[in-house]
Structures are given as C-alpha cells and as structure tokens.
Length: 146
Image (cartoon, rainbow, N blue to C red; front, side, top):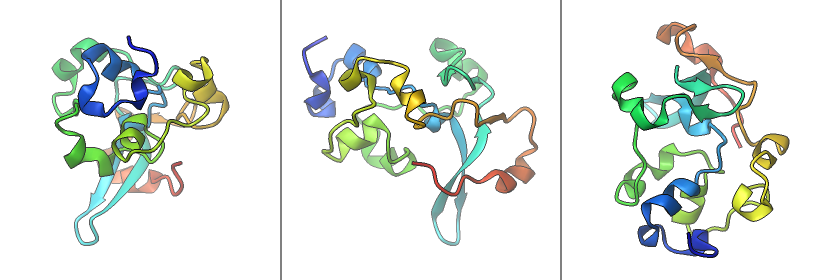
C-alpha cells in the first residue's frame, strides 16, 4: 500500500487500500430504520447476525452475501448514493466529504484498538438481529451515534 493512501481521492484507491480504510467500528453493520414520512435514518442497537459484537468485525466477510444477500458492498462508485447511510465517523464518509481521518483511526494512531478505547465502536453495545423481532427494532434506536 502507498504511504498515506487514505489522503488520496477514494476513486484512486486500489482494492487493498479501499478495504484498509475501514476503521473497524462496526457501525455500518447496525440495522437502520428509514422513516418514509420524514426520510430520517435512525441507527439501532440491532446488529447484523454476522457481526461479532466484541471484535466489531464480520464473521463471514468474504462470503457474507451468501448469508446476508442484502449486505451493502461499499465501493467508490456507490459512495455518492449511500454516504448518507454511513455513520458520521466512518472513514469512507469522511474521506468522501474531503475531511481527514480522526486521531483514533488506526491508520493515524497505528493502533487497531484505539477505535474501541475511544468509544467510537459498537463493542459490547449490540444485540443480534436473530434475537429481536424486526417489529421491535424501533425500541432500540440509538439517539446519539457519533
């Protein structure tokens, strides 16, 4: 990977650099509710059944679409249409908006656990979608998801 590749435009990243941009927070794996009347998007504590709530990583990342066909694959070509759906702290969203990565991002700090220590990950805060009926997800909306 190139030195400080994360400062490049997203479209210029190679696939390995693109994948390396992920900060490992797990927020994108939270189920979201979109309210049609207001077009508001709300994150819930309900995580994809493939998310490991401690590592904040997908347990089947390479084959996830086999288990969760609706899982969104982020790519430079899709970022324009889905960046609103990403959490405000997401490295993909930040770079898409021309903003720098936060100090806790492992590419800046050199420490993959910094995202957890800073409280920016969902570690220990999620419930599996396999445990909560979808009609109850509204009860698990997160009011302030950094």
